Image (cartoon, one colour):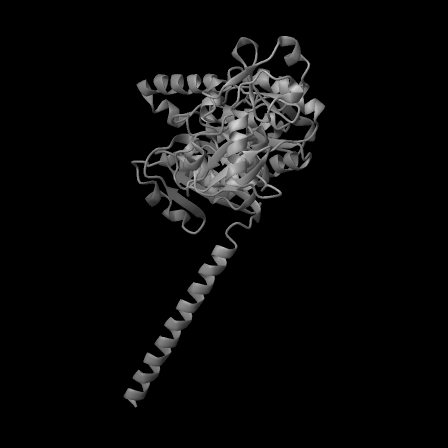
Length: 448
């Protein structure tokens, strides 16, 4: 009798393990099949470096005051205070990734973007306490106009117009103030020229169209300004949801840098200045120029040049031509030109060409664009560079002259050594100015 029981148990155990393995395999395959399908909710991305106490408070406030469907993604920038252990009480509620090195705010956010599955995304500092109705009111503001690209709340501590006066000093009194403040009031929504990245709400599809943050900025500062400029250049608006207040302890990670803060901030300021020259002038120029003459919202890739080679991390190479991509066989070496690294997300957004191009056709177009003949506008080669006054450089494209934002932009596209045609001033002024050409973001994370 005992033997029969043992045999039944052994047989049942085998069936259990077979069923478990089959269910696991099917679940894994389903997860892979649905990985890129967003869910109807918000992904809240929190990059963090040390400051575990602030992070735990932040997550606790999200759990207490966010009834909307959401996921929390914490990206640890190689902290030394064992963030993973601190997150154990939130097991199953927080998706967690740990970086092997500190890639700064931009790198942490980018990794979180790659992981995010929500139809909307919030980028959030770790030194934040969210409050009742914080996300509800921001979502209402974002959904009020499809031209709104990003929404930010008001707070007690930040640079710019998102800071409001508050009557409290300690966090204990903050909750009472927030309850009085956070009542629905669309009259408190207002358009802004700038939002700060301590808390940004975005649509997932817009985030993908604009692209990742630029990882050329160290640790923190300016990378959010950079991304906001890129968003505004596509014709989208920024809004402050004045009926959404959250508490900000304030630049906790940056203050911890001590004597390192000044060189980090100086590097980022210089990088930003070299990349954009005068970014707000470019925004005004686009609004009054190309966006007015050729209305419609842009995608980030539409601000990239034509007649260039690009590649992703896997080494796949494409030829960009008038806002479309064409697959290139044999790599960039066969064209005697360097390919510019773009993220997989960036390249996925660029539509494929309507027909295929041979290697010889691509080679001929690259050669033609590099010629420096001083031809009249109607005779110039497509993709040709044109020198303008004050050192400005344009690309001849679709009957317009598209200005490069800066010398840095030319360098990032490996076009600084291309020959430039010189046109008379009167010829330059007779041609409409097209969309600005911007630099692609620098990406150091090998998985992007």
